[in-house]
Length: 126
Image 1 (cartoon, one colour):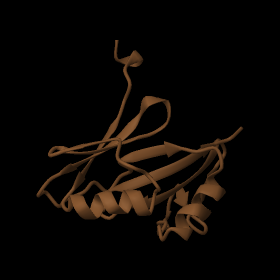
Image 2 (cartoon, rainbow, N blue to C red):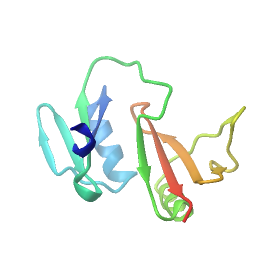
Image 3 (cartoon, helix red, strand yellow):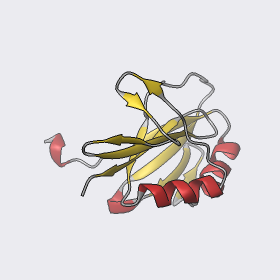
């Protein structure tokens, strides 16, 4: 049953005003819906990111949202021009060069939002 369900990402924000501004300014997204429970940003194919207010400051050390893109280098260049800083990793099985990891089946990059949530970009091989 769930294999036919849509999935959306919900991300915590300790400062909703800051978070909403960051998603607008850095990622170029505009809220499609807002209320006291948070802000929703609509993405491709009916998917969305939802920011919700919380007093909890802990964040996961893993990728919380993965975004599939068709041109990773162009996305990185645009996001860097907007001030997004990409993470660098050097550990067994994962080494980035200029923020990018290359895998046999694609490439990826990660960055944190204003709230410390880790977002990933992935470009599958063609």
